[in-house]
Image (cartoon, rainbow over all chains, first blue to last red; front, side, top):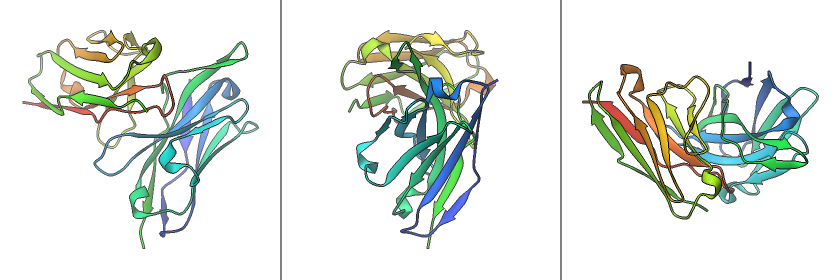
Length: 125
Length: 108
């Protein structure tokens, strides 16, 4: 069965960086993409971006461009999300989710069908 | 960017009643690439419906999705106690894959 397991909670000071991992199992990692979604306390869901598991094509939401980097390590079926220059507004639970699939040489949109358990990132001085 | 607007923000219903949740898009969602999620406190969202009307694996048939273009609906035929939660729609047709603001279904 498909599982996405994320790294543990982090506490960071403003201006620092955080890197969250998401280890996938139970499917062919390179045949799917990974989306990252965050949720501030008491708020809704915010899509942050997407990375392909095949060739590291990325798409980021405009408001995070320049501060976020998504990468993958296909040898360990792990996706990473690094967020830099952290501020208090980045305090949130960060989720990874499987999304999009690769078939016949093309990528296709896909719903976020499997999710990690979430990683709480707290930014506080 | 496609903006998704969910209504109502809160729905107060009793177990056994029918719930109808709406999701409106600021522009047409191509190929009806629209999903619905359920989220309970402290847990990750759970995929209920994808491609506007297809139930995800293991989702009971009391959940159904409909609509196309810019107007989509999630219907819960008869609410069970475990259905009281927050529901989100999301479009995955174009980047960014925007979410609606959510509808909370609470016990009346």
